[in-house]
Structures are given as structure tokens and as C-alpha cells.
Image (cartoon, rainbow, N blue to C red; front, top):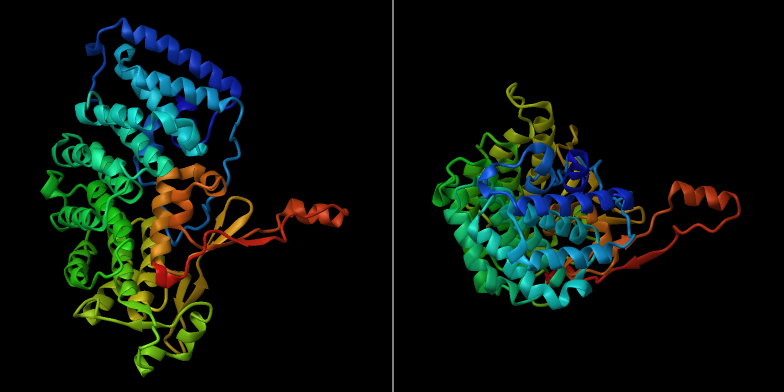
Length: 478
């Protein structure tokens, strides 16, 4: 049982038909047993073990510029056999709350999360969307167990990104805000912050509401979590920083917010947790990127607008970018701090964190020095010219495509989608999930796989010569 649960929840992979059958029979058996036993036989507020829940409750799935070896690949064990019937059954179990127990709800939510992650289920839950939302909110509100509430938060996130319904935000925002402020579990607070960010983006929050939530998340970061009774909790602060960045992508003009926000993020660069530092640094890079916008017809062609030849070459496939305002008043001091993190050699930092800090902050520093430049992979310094350089950042999508991540807003959105969908990202992307396609309007090109090349040599037909664009927007629309 633990192995199957870990396979389902940690790696994001579905189980085989035979194993799923065994799991279903066990769930029925355990549900009946749980209904006939006292709830007090199980500690309702216990924290789930790493074995059970490490994959879907943590931020371990967030990508780092320094570790692109874990690209977004297809789920190799995706089993399409009868998953629609399994979904119908589990939705019925979730809505039949009167006959459910804590344990049965936990397992039903875990199954829903697995199916919603690995399949685009919108048409199958369309009629039950409101009822499912209500069930998840009840579990979040009552906090009968930490695991039930955190799974309900994950399920609500997946419902929001799947249903893409404009009524979700207004219905769930009070419940999520209350969980963030009042929950006794830091784990639930962290999950609720992520869920509120997702429901704001995909659930119909308007610009005013998005700005309100950005202020809420910024307060959490500025107070090191104290504003929500989570003092110095790295998970809550990281989640608030990440969701602030995702929401900030949606706002065209952040001139009024930029100065204060950069200062708060600079304070978080001194954190002892690398995930907090990187999330703060990415937001700084985003704010500097947003201080430049595409050139318009009535703009003067001056030196600042034109940029260097290197800048023009970098944006030869896109619009020329012009500085509109100062993202922060003391960029020199900020660059000094970023440079320190890009070259940090503290012995108390693990090798893994050190490598991640070096690569991420070298790329962030490159953007702060020249906001026309987006994320770069393997960023380094030319010793002769003292110029920063690096290869363009690309991410593989499944076995077929490649995304060029040339702007920070694309990187931040991609990270957010990957955290929510995990191993099912490629499935949602290629099955036409509107929330995913609208979030990442980038070119995708099909690659030739080794098996295709082998088939071509034998006279077969290779699939990898095709190129196409998916819902392409220009930068000045975003």
C-alpha cells in the first residue's frame, strides 16, 4: 500500500489497471471499516508522513534554472484503461459526504487529484463542478484532518485549472483566506496560499482582486510569515513569494508597486532558505523586466530605446524594448547583493543549494543589469569583455516539443503550472486545456526522437519534422 500511494502521490504517475483494482477494493474495505470505527481511533490532526504525501504537498516540483535535467516529460505509466469510470465513481464518493469518513474522503481526494493531474477531465466534471467545489471547501473549512484539508486544497487547485470557470474565485476566496490566517497547520496555510493564487488566476478574479491578493502575499513576505501566525516558516513565505510573482504577471503596469516590492524582496534575499531567496530573486527580475515595454510608434529613437547591438540581436525575433521607469532607486546596491548570491561559497550551504543559487542568481543579475535579457541557462562571465552570456533557456515538453523561455513571465507561469499539474503537464498541454494554453503562448516544435531517426534509416516515416505554434501572442499583449 505505501508503495502504491507513493507512486500515485509523489511521482504523479497513475498505477496499472491491476494495481488500481486492488487499490479500489482496499479503499472500499477500509471505508467500510472506518465507518464502523470511532474517529477518535485516529489522530485527526496528524501530519502525513513523507512516504504518503511528499510529492503533492511540497514545492519539490518547482523547477530551477540550475537543474533543467528534470524536463516536463510524458508520464510513462499513464494508464488510460477505464479511468473515466474511476473518475465517475470517485466523484460520486466525494459528493456522498453523509456516508463518508475522514479516511474515505482522504483517499477519494487523493484519487481525484491523481486523475485530474494525469487527464484533462473538464467535460466529465462540468455538471458536478459546483458540488465538487462545495465539498472541497467544506473539508478545507472544517480541518477534520491535516491530510484531508491539504488534499482538498490540491483538488480545488486542479478543479480551478481544469474547469476555468469565472465563478470559482468569488466562492472560494473567503474560505481560503480564513485557512491562511487561522489554520493551526503551517502545511495547510502553505497549501491555501498556493490554492488562492491558482483560484485567482483561473477562477475569475478581476484586476482589483488580483492586486488585493498581491498586497496580502506581500505582507506575508514582508513580515516573514508573522502576519498569518507563521513566523519564519519558509514554506509559507516561499509560497507567498511565488504566488505574488504569478499574479504580478497578470498586471500590465507595476510602476506604483515596484519600489516597495523590490525592497521587500531584497530583504528576503538574506533568508537562510534557498527557496525563499530564489523566489524573491525571480520576482525582482520580473519587476525589472516589466519596467521595459515594447517600442511604440510615437516613441523617440534615442540611445536608451535602441540599446546595444547585442540587445538588438537578442530581440531580433521580437519587439524593441524601451525603459519606461526605474524599477528600483538603488540598482547598484541590488546588483551587489545579487552578485554575492551568484558567487556564494558559504560552507554551511549544501552543494545542491549552492549550485542552484549560483545559476539562478547569475541569470537574475543578468536581467537586472539589462532588463532586455530574460532567463538564461548556464549563465557565465566572459573574462575578456566582462560581459555576461549564456545559452537560451529551453524546456522539453513531453517527447515532442520544446519551449523557448525567453522572458521571466513565461518562466514564472511555467513553474506555477508545473507545480499544479506535475507529471500531467504535457497531457493537459496537448489535450488543449485552455488555462494552460492561455498561460504559455509560446512556440512549440516537434523534435525527432532516436526511435524516429532509427525508423527513418530503415525506410520508415519519422514524425519529428513538424513545426507549429500554439495560441501565439506577442509580448506587447502581455
